[in-house]
Image: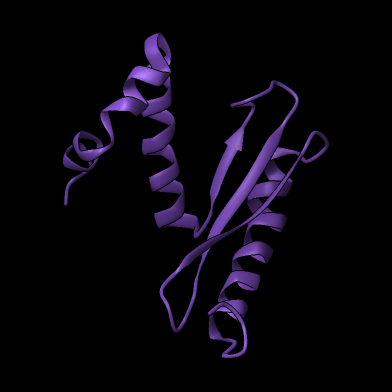
Length: 105
């Protein structure tokens, strides 16, 4: 599925909730998809508050396929630290959790 089709399939209420901010939100969604493809995690830098940055990655349960999220957020992390240190460690943790048979049912 190409990116434009994916965005078209998003629930219409997302666009209405975002209102005039939809173009900015849409751009953020596209960037998050690229980050996930290239890095294995997504970054949110000053999206919800000017002083906050966050990184997140999915954990997909081995047996049920349920999707969980690991994230780390805060006002002190720099973009470089999120991208080069915290994001990769979070992704490694997610992979370890996904392969653990006793976890995530």
